[in-house]
Image (cartoon, rainbow, N blue to C red; front, side, top):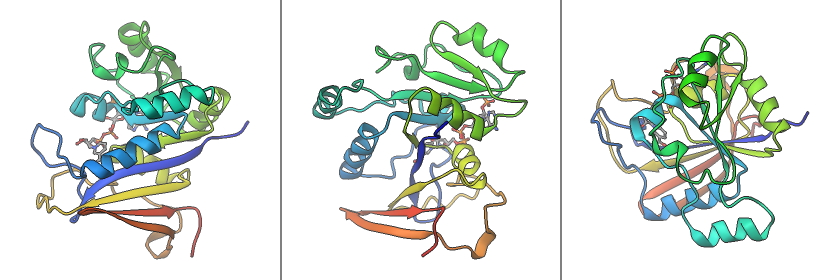
Length: 228
Ligand SMILES: NC(=O)c1ccc[n+]([C@@H]2O[C@H](COP(=O)([O-])OP(=O)(O)OC[C@H]3O[C@@H](n4cnc5c(N)ncnc54)[C@H](OP(=O)(O)O)[C@@H]3O)[C@@H](O)[C@H]2O)c1
C-alpha cells in the first residue's frame, strides 16, 4: 500500500509561535501567502488538522478560489480535497464549519483511538467516517488508511500536536514554513512543534529546497527526510 506524500504547512511568528493566547486566531500571514496556501491546498488530495484547531479556529478548511476548484474538476478530481482530523476524546462540535463546507463530494474522515471511537461515532457518525487506528493514534496506520482511500498527497495544517507527531515519527516529506514579521512574546503561546525526540536530534540538518519572499512574509521550503 502506498502512503501519501506528506506536506506540513505552518505560519509562525519570528519568535516561533503559531498563535497568541487571545481567543481570536492570530493572522501571521498576508494576503499573498494565504493565496499561496490556497494553491497548495488545491494541489492536495486531503488536508488534515488536529481536533484542537477545529475547536479553537473553527476553520472551513477549503480551497477558496473558484478558478482552482474548476481546475480540479477539469482534471477529474473533486472540487475540494478530503478533510481529515485526529481526536482521542471525540469531543468535536457537530456544528463546526469543518463538517459543513466543501463536504458535498466526500465525508470528512476522523482518526481516533479504539477508546475514542464510540463517542466519535455517537456525536459525528452522521457527518464523518470514523476510523480507529490503535490504542493511541498510529500515524503510520493513518497514512496507510488514507493511501487506501486514494490519497496521494496529504497537507497537514497544524496545530503543534499534529506537526510534532508527523515530524517525530519521520513521516513528513516536505515542510512549508511561512514566517510572519511579528513577535508574540509570550512563552505560553503555542509553538510550531512541542518538545519531542526528532529523527537524528538537534544536529541533523534538513535540506532547504526553496526560499520565497511574499511581501513581508518569508516562505521556507524544507525536505525533512533529506540532508543537504
Ligand atoms: N499558525 C498556523 O499555521 C496554525 C495552523 C493551525 C493551528 N494553529 C494553532 O495551533 C493551536 C492548536 O494546536 P494544538 O497543538 O493545541 O492542537 P492540534 O494539533 O490542532 O490538535 C490537538 C488535538 O489532536 C488530538 N490528538 C493529538 N495527538 C493525538 C494522538 N496521538 N492520538 C489521538 N488524538 C490526538 C487531540 O484531540 P482531543 O483533545 O479531541 O483528544 C488533541 O487535543 C491553535 O492555537 C491554533 O490556532 C496555528
